[in-house]
Image (cartoon, rainbow, N blue to C red):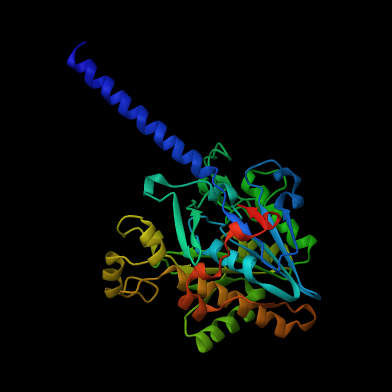
Length: 387
């Protein structure tokens, strides 16, 4: 055998080895389930497909946690991981699921709204497959997801996504983005079925408030804020003022654009009686001019390139050597959600929602996110759910 053929054979073996190893890694990532111990406030768990039968049996189907208070009141939907590469969302949702006690009204929580995106990844950008949150009982492991649903689950993409029902022309990728497919269709593409199911949930359950949790780049102007349509502006403004005055962090208000369709804070407001709020916390991991996309960057939010840009006033949030650690992001989300509920309850006492045992910003920053997670090994099996 010639030397050329030997080299070609070696290259083929190396390529096959890489394909097999990476294939196993991606398979394991897609099938890894995060255990969620249901806390004392959880009164029931259903599937999103209960609100759209066309989701049943698909990977897009996901858990919906109900937390009903003893006293009647309003209803609030919290959904996280619309974009699964913004993990402060699911970390916040789990704090509520594992700890919250509802004294009045009902909380409905979807911790993994885009379940396909949560089982997808972005190797081209060097995303880690997993990250871990330290706790008192060990490390809690999470998948690192992607912004969009996997093409394995929804394919092919159109050349141009024509939004329903407005018919606005959007990027072809937006057909797999669950913050571009609202209000959805019962039998549309898979992500439209997801958002349609959520709309049906809000209508059938008579949800008063919907909170969509996100994270955004420090170089993006719509970050560290609450995005709302006109109908929710007063509550959002009071929330922003109160968290700044009482808790010392900025969280300004951004109006929902009328001309950009498919977004939760636009379509929920236009197509239902529910008041939508979209929360953005700074996420340095998503900025393009950073170092490697490591777990350390994801959790600590420290990057020398962003620090340099901050000194040149190129960022839209304060940024220093402390970065934007995960506990600040999650703490902000917890406080903003609780303040939204308080402001709403002040204005609609007959539909009030009272929630206890959820930490606010200062507590999460002091104790860390993992302090509020419970060991699934010590929980009853019937109280463990997987996402």
